[in-house]
Length: 430
Image 1 (cartoon, rainbow, N blue to C red):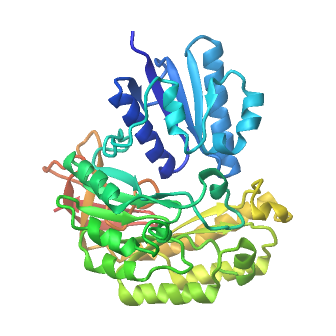
Image 2: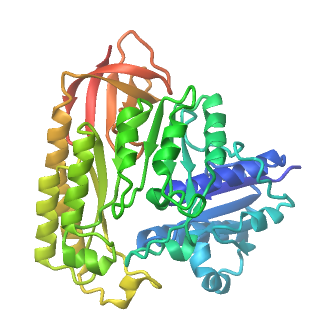
Image 3: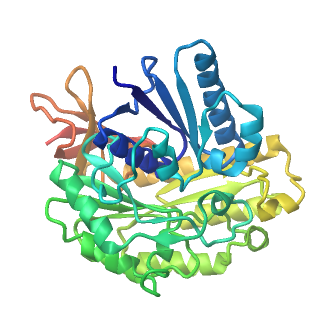
């Protein structure tokens, strides 16, 4: 009987993309591999996250659960890959001898050898989508050359390596031919794209090229670093209809002292100038950012500077994390002197402020007719969708009354917005 493989993915969209490549390689080789977490598989691969404490805890708990299943005879083999495995392999080998193999973030060919499968680089468009069939994450590069004090990604993912434009274009054309409407470009750091291959930043050129792909409806950009931001990208976003009026640009903080200790290579003043320039070029753009609170040495004054900055900048979308003291990072050399309860209070404060800002932004859409991409349909036939200003999982949902109409998943529809709160909209299908 053919062995069945279950790939369990934890962590971010980059990990999800890696799992999709693994599934595609296994499926193409004739193995029955799936991503749904089930109990009827012979072999389990856990693709782990090792970014912050909570993610590491989830990864370890998932591995331990599968170890118990192996001890009980429910599965035959257990493999662990991804960031946690890359970062703590030696410790994990000692602590978890029941695991049949640990593999790092760039060791897919070695993992495939365990299945007697040769890695095939020519299967660029043959990864197995684990997202709904109408959208896909496409990685344009791997690794990161930045040295942010809080971030362990370079330890786990290595240096920045850009994918060739032709390879990215080929993959997206493949997904569009399969019915994908929306593609999200992801990387540890988008704006570095091309420096290694083309000796200059060419993100704008890449986006311009991808925007010409026939049949692609939305192209979205995630994870752009603010320092030395290539401003020509904003002009492409403004001019190309396919490119969503959306930019995810994590700023992390606004206090110059905290930014210095974080090694972000930018100041609050430079951040203000960049945001003003972006909005000058493209007034309609939706700016999403992420903030990090509780970094070593962060004072109450630093926090108030951050709050004032958020209130002034009026970001359309914002997320917040509390600092995690990570071994091997520059921040780990500093004293983790902000108590956990203070970190949590500051994170809550940030989101309280942003909730009011988000509410005011959303209220402006009441009465408007906007385009939505349908992500789900409920039992009554009503739809849940998103606008071009909203990425899956992290941004607003639109709850849509469809009436006598039917809007299948993956369809672009017109919706008149009738209500809005801080993090969702409601409307009627037009």
